[in-house]
Length: 496
Image (tube, rainbow, N blue to C red; front, side, top):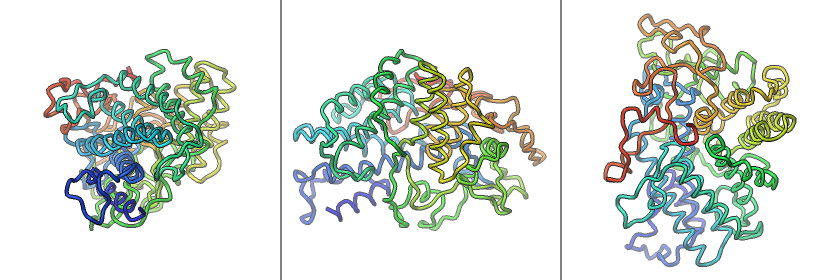
């Protein structure tokens, strides 16, 4: 079993299909198809989610949230820096999430239903629901009700609200059948064999789903019931302690951007002035926790929409890079996220005192995840609680906190909360390409700015609202909705 899990682990991070157990040409030294159980499928399917969420979606989310910019002289992610996403760029990730994660989780759910292994059923349902939520948050609409029917080559695209309601119902149905002592198959996320941790994670996922819906649907009573149960994770939920300093087994973002396993030394992802300057103005120590100093020992951030390629001064050594390591966690949901959602709930529906308590707890949790102290200065001196401005305070602090853990979620939340907001200064003013003049003092801390070059279908002063439908999903599907030039500016359902 150990050798099988190691193989699944390496294969998943190598972005190769984890469905090889269905191959009719069975290796006599490998388990036959009828003997493959959930413990042999689950870890590989998990790793496909971890590889996508912890790398591609971290990178794109970091650029769209203006945590990252493209480094000098290279152009790998310059399109993201300009708030663009083509139909081809996300295709392999879409396939990884659907064909290699969702389909395997469906197999596990079917197996565990037959065997009445409700702990494993819940775990698979949580990963399935999380993955579908990611697809909705990225694309807006996605095949769901017909999405995994292998006999249907043109599944309909369900609207995001339908998918959200569906995965909420799936979580409730799975939770109703499980107890904390229910057995869970082998997994990398918790490593535990009982369902208690998965129950808490399911509740945290429900909290996120309901809060995302809260501006467009009345979900107050459902939130009240969930929060009254007070059964959420007590710490960050992350894939940690499982990574090795080897190709195919390292943290996926580290492997993509920092490792030399494949002989590459190219520098792409560097810090954005929006984040560095916002943290510097308050001497926030999370800057040093989230980024390395540049070649001169300073913390400098670049500008979205350009790669400074005309410059002889602003080389890659001029900018600071994200902190990363082969064994860095891939966060599924952080305690800070949970506490910020609770703070928002109480600010909207409960007491200001409760909201303030959770707001402070969220910032404390962010500092704890970063391994540093000093959170009290943030919420007592620089950003004290004010219930009337809860969206602005939570939006900014969540944007900062998620820059070190869940960049994709930061992009989601700034679309929903509308903070940080765009200021009046543009990227073209901060960096004049024609004269190669960089004037960082023009940037206003705590704001976003229009990139130097930006997606003209989106327009100035706007963040990308959604990915174009993945080519691997839509090109051969006549049921794929038509997307016009205005698609990048159309919010997903919960951000309208």
